Image (tube, rainbow, N blue to C red):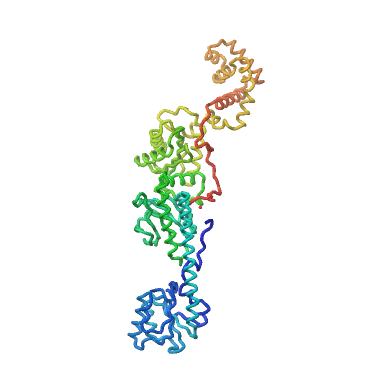
Length: 567
């Protein structure tokens, strides 16, 4: 199921137009007199008749062949003949103009035109028996193909169910089998999963809630609504949970057929079973996937991203977006925390997507009115998060004026989180960390794993650290006090509780060991940076959420929704 199904003649029974194009009939020089707009009617059988009442032997969908011999002579009888054919659902009437007639009777033309029944004349003699043999072979062959395709559909969905496939995989299979876009929504008309086929996500999900609410629910797979959606209910524990929708084809002329209904019914059944076996609510999964796609820029276009976010109930236009990351303490049930935080934010009226980006990191995308102060809103969300998860660390990125910049806000929040030392105090009245908090010390803390930082610290301070280790001295502390006193020896001596002569002597030893001049402002700056680097390297190791990278960089080439996305 790696490619979309390619629609073709085998996907449907032959139509009137298909039959007329067969060589066995084309030799009779067929001419469509009426009902040309109905030549797409399926032909389910061919019926040769010379009876005055053939409709009593028909079931609908037949192509009726006649020499015209049994037609009544009076117009009323002709109308009755045509009315009965139309009422039973005959596909078309084909009359041979060889024996009784050489042109179609006017009464017959008027009656067929009035009832919308295709009337086709044959100017030359045609072997009706040969026509029935050829067409019936086509019909039976199509029915056998349809049975085989239906069997493959059942086998495919059975395999998906047995291996515990989630909603994304189930919908992807449905879209590939049908060649149509398939959408899963819940009871409040939020589109949770969209697998597009032949159309961008933005076209499928644009104004989704309004369009969905104008499409009535059905008890089983059926077509409804102004756009002609094919929809089937999805249940959970015996109650309706939502529905799966198959959208009409982008190209006209591909009406829904029995096989589409079969695919959708099996999709709904597989989803109902999957809903029972998957512990994580699908709303949570939809938020997670959408956030990850935004963070990693997996959408095909900004318009697709906006459509997907809007279909989940978040304003995608005329809003500012702020990304928050909450790093959770180890040993906590991150899934339960995710659900609780989402519920509490909803209760406060916050418009946000909440989802786990890794096992120990929650992501929040907050949508704000452009006029609302963003720090005030972030503070509210941060305190809600900390109330739900005591001990968490919340980091925020700068606001994004457009959803397309949300990835940048998440990257900033990740850099802030990377630079945040455990237990680092925050300014009074603020519960979250932001970019302005990153000074030299926090910058070096964020870069402590970089070999260049480690090499710099060792090169500048290694001899001094080695001397202290070998001789039990504390020259590093003397250097720190001197640098923090901005090179004032008197202040440094007083702070350390030492005599000025002792400090002078120690500073001379430091200069000798480091081969530098402590009177140089540039060298003092370099040593101060090196001391901060040493502090960062000695800090307790920080557990990285999920054990993965702290930064969020684009990952091109990964298949998204619903299907490599680039920006």
